[in-house]
Image (tube, rainbow, N blue to C red; front, side):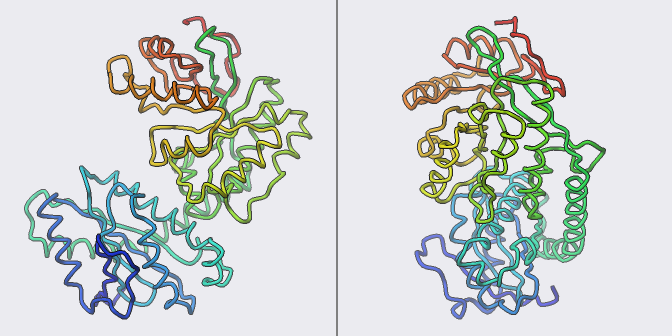
Length: 424
């Protein structure tokens, strides 16, 4: 990044059309202005850098970036104030907060931008633009979040931001390569070990089913499952990793003679992908002698679904095969009630965020009661996740929540608990 003459692709908040690149600014005055405004008003801002590999199609990618910025409206904790072209294939996005906003929020936004870019460039009309190359192979993303808590001169803060961005380019690429190699080794070495956490009936304490969770079977810097799956999506390895987790969970459940319902985590973006292979799970179930009606696919609520009509057709296919659907972590992401209303799942799993301290938080009690009523009307059963205290369990039972799981009831284990919970 040796060209510092930034050409902003200005996206005004009230602008209703995609800007033309030929009408973009020829200097970085808007960048400096908005950066200074946000440092003054909130004390912090973030900059995301996008670097595209040489494809010979940079002019078409530039127009795609302008379109992409528009698609990100309301998908981030912050807000993309504008996009700026630094040189051929290099862009900056200025992220500004709409509320209290910290480094963790920025890192989440950075991860969302990576994921959405992969999805965006995998759409049929965009695949033609990148001539069949995988989206993950044509760009890298990295960013810097700056807080001006000491009243530092805004020009100095901005200069510091670009220093970090430029030095971060090589390190980000090296980190991505390291992560990709680690994930490839995990997949090739079959290094995923399943564990199972029971889901109990809150009426009589019996085991209703088990959620299959995955652990890396060796020391790894990607040992945290959430980090592992986030990095696999960025590296284009989400599908093979998920299929490995699913295969090992099913095989292990058969060896443990688990006959109750098995909940398997599924990323909605994988089900929507053009190259998603149908029938792989069905073939394995048939080989193992497991009924499809005993399998529930959990869809995380933190993943955005853009085309509900298309996704419902995908879910209809799986329901016709005998599977049931659960929405996981309801209340922790941005899909929320729309996902619940559009998909009409058989199960809804309340996130730990809603369950934690529900016995002392009237707002959470009102939200859960409303969800229980709504779910009852659409035929969905409610599962409370992350129950850790007896007081939480007691009030969830009073509010009519059907099922529960959490450390209070049983922890995930290689050989899970099979007895009824006695503390009901």
